[in-house]
Image (cartoon, rainbow, N blue to C red):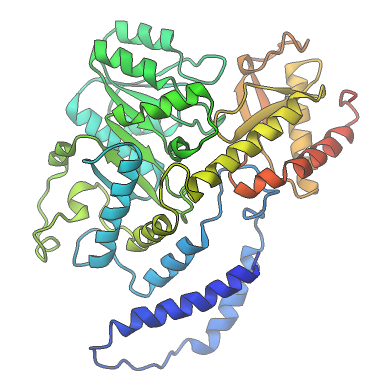
Length: 457
């Protein structure tokens, strides 16, 4: 966990802190006594002991939930900013970090082809989607929010919070919003916003954004792109044609959500909401008796629903994007390509093994599959057993309950005695996963072989 490079990071952090401190010297000296000093080491060591009760999220054998280690420049920059602890609500609480946030968010917007925009960082995708749907409701009051059945559950919940009607339309066999079902909903009228998910959390599928945009041209609804998980993948060079088409049109959405704390190499929590039309800022307008008087420049609190926000998150993101710019063909894009390559490699190994049944090929870096059994209900039980057996060898996967239609159970001669199935799922988010696919597959091989009801290889 603490590699030589991480040890070197501590030296770099100390040097950076000295540089920071040298700019804050024109102040009276403070007393250096610390009444809690004698207990500090004891408590911190106790904290380390408690933190050992965790899965190894940083290791390539952790391939379950969407947990990606932040880049060390992000960790160091975040830690450095903590000595100031800026608040990016108003400029007087985070003067330097507010400027860094504006620059970092502008770079995210340029990744989607936007030279003008309105946007800011927030605590994560949930808050970012809340703001996007709130603006949608302001622009089309009383009209319905429509998303696919595989869209993140927060869209339904947030619509309830905002008192907006919500409709979930079915997906096709690839986990994407079904265009025919969307047309039926549009024909019924009263649709104000369609959520296009670019990277569902269960399967990594991308909704057919080009087709959704064509329907917008005829029906006039608003398009919100929930790209919290997949938004960065537009930079990758090894996407499939349909996936590439969707990312090519992403800049035509009215609003976009992306989570730097997923594939943007940031610590939690760091989300971002972007609006193509900056004039939506008028809906955020409010009066504050004391926060916005230090500068005539725009304060970030004037374009967001959250008040106090960690300026350290902006500093970490700005620093990461300085080291790894968001450009196609660059080192950051290459890291994304490695994640997708790992998913494709694991998918091909599983597809070539008769003991497993794969769903559709991964569009990004998430793979879903299941063990074969005579009945769907038995498949679900086997999946849970394999999940537990793999964990005993330190391979940590995830379980997902998905529609049976995502798998060709008829061709596999699996009796359909349920409409949903518990399957195995891996989010291969770490670039190192590309070098660990063989090891992961070997553990899966041993896990399924140990089960008495497993089919022969």
